[in-house]
Amino acid sequence: MNSVEMQASGTSAMQVWQAQAMETRQRVWGDVPDEKWNDWRWQLSHRLNSLEDLSRVMELTDEEIEGLSAPDKFRVDITPYFATLIDPTDPKCPVRRQVMPLGRELRAFTSMMEDSLAEDAHSPVPGLVHRYPDRVLMLVTTQCASYCRYCTRSRIVGDSSANFSRQEHEAQLDYIRRTPQIRDVLISGGDGLTMPPKILDRLLGDLRAIPHVEIVRIGSRVPVFLPQRIDDEFCAMIRKYHPLWINIHVNHPREITPELREACNRLADAGVPLGNQSVLLAGVNDSVHIQRLLVHELVKMRVRPYYLYQCDMVEGAGHFRTTVSKGIEIIEGLRGHTSGYAVPTFVVDAPGGGGKIPVMPNYVLSQAPGKVVLRNYEGFITTYTEPLDYDPLEIRHLESQIPRRTEAGQEGIASLLEGRQFAIRPQGFDATHARGGEMHRLRADSSKWQPFLVGETLEGTAGGGDQPAIEAPAQNGEGE
Ligand code: SF4
Image (cartoon, rainbow, N blue to C red; front, side, top):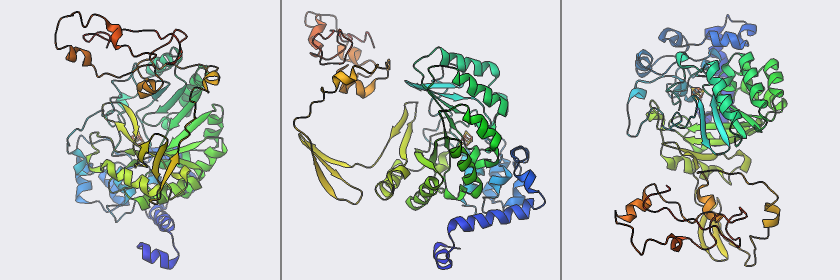
């Protein structure tokens, strides 16, 4: 049924997808009683991964057969529940595209990497990525409920022989214990919710026992692949560890089913704030209209759209990648056109390991002293007149009551704005510009390059104090 026929019949796309899922369950698993079907352990132990299994659910295309037959492919495993969401006759079905391998996923592309976010390079101990100043990503398992073809961590995910040991979990916890600047821990993997309940319970308990860990977050696709796992027992366990946040991962509204709604309701009723992370995927959700339906359905089940990711340049994901401008177009179509809390932040996770970089349409058209010219989503252009008597230093006495956090080596542009440093030099900048010359009389006095009132003051406050501590700028590459 196309959208015109649906409108005429008063049927929504969501209803059509739901009816199709029920038909598939009846056709393939009609003999499985509800008691088994709703048991998450049954779902996990009956996952589909072979040509034979999957041909019972859908009419396989030649390219899917090629993908499934490839010897070195990323792991295939699909829960029966998630398999019912696949359109059995449409190879372009967005659910099917996410989990069914295609021959083309094996093709290399320019800039492709095995670990495109340099996570392993930024891990002080195996599986603990410490990229940002105050938080860490804790990879606790390599196992997932089903496997996404575009997975950023396909280098380890799915490989049970690469799974994290108890000793490695301990090393991760030890690092967090002895690093007091970590106030936020994100548990991911793989998917922590696929771990044996007792082990997950113990890990959460160990994290909660660390006094400086303020927030624990879990990133999980289990509510989407295996909503049966979010049972009363799980919710009772999770309640012990608040404040605990969960981000789910839904890419297309076809994944939003009564079962997922029920799982999200349970989590929200257990006091868990919920967010969603989607990946922008060619042929799956690279459409303003699909994204709009997705974010509306998410907020209806108390899930805040959080991030929309540009697809990473990771092996296997080449055919899913879009241009960055497609993401900007989607945000243009959402921001202002729907409620602000339904609009995710579009981010490019920096290739090479720089972390998430937000990208959005330009709303600031021009600036002059005292004026900012802005445009809204409709094209309405307006001027914000800035106060000419604003005193940004008036807040200082309140600011001084708040402890400052240090971000050694990661202060970035914020440190320029705060006056703690004057410039950020690329590595080797001073050496390049010294041109190999000798120290001479015009270079000898480094104080000539110290900007007045910029740098740490004797009181430890940012620039603007009375007595700036004069630091010699790096000479001939020293101090970089
Ligand atoms: S659920 Fe997450 S970690 Fe697992 S395969 Fe999908 S993207 Fe990768």
